[in-house]
Length: 332
Ligand code: FES
Ligand SMILES: [Fe+2]
Image 1 (cartoon, rainbow, N blue to C red):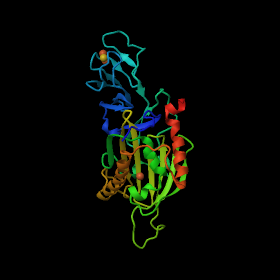
Image 2: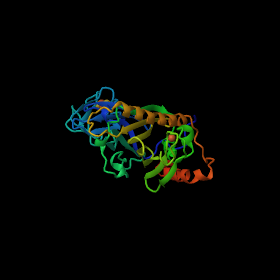
Image 3: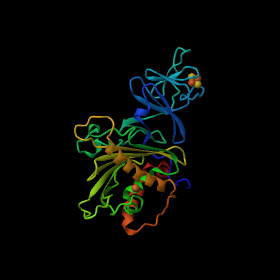
Image 4: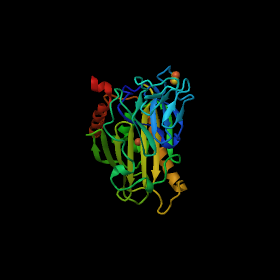
């Protein structure tokens, strides 16, 4: 499993936690893009993500730092930092230090998840994280679905794979039969790689039912890719479900993978916890995703790939689209 030859410092939104994992006042340690970071939630409920080390003498804010109001307080000498990483108080000095700033990251919460904007040059976000409920323009909202976290999620840490592998799945019709055991090859009805947000729709069938034709069993998936880090899907023709897959580089070799499944509510059911049937179905979807992960985490990126004619258009469009997020390629 050699290190992917693709940039592990892509630009875009990347999931770093589920929202419910970071309570008000909590300080959460993590490493992404080769940097130690802390995520902490102010008393107002707003979240901050910043580099982990204090600009004073370098204490790690995730080891003993605490939240007071809308500030994080360093455990070493009590300096206080706001959500933008600015020093707002030195307890034994009249004025704060206006010059030193801890690197902070744009952060957004959506789809029950926490995403940070990563840009190696510190540029501002230029697209949004797709909304797994509202993003498909069908008027549905989170109220129509059971919660995903913690009932139907998958979290795998430090796998040797790359965000692009996951998105390539979306144009890879031939793998469905072998990895997902589908009886029919999916048909792509949309492959749109124009903007930072891209779209793929396809039809598919998972279960072979004797006596039923392919048309009767038709179902499909619509996917929206928000850059390389986040993809959301909506299904039709099967149990109503939405998914969010998110791949976030930890360092130059590995990524964390998070997957969340939301199952449509049964009419009138207001309970928080999904019923047994919903859990069983979400587990089946997670198992399909695990089958992909098994391939990705041992894959060696093939470039140029040996494609047949029918694969060519989708893969080339996706790979060309992906280059816009790789800072090294843009500079080259
Ligand atoms: S190292 Fe943080 S206050 Fe001194
Ligand atoms: Fe797949």
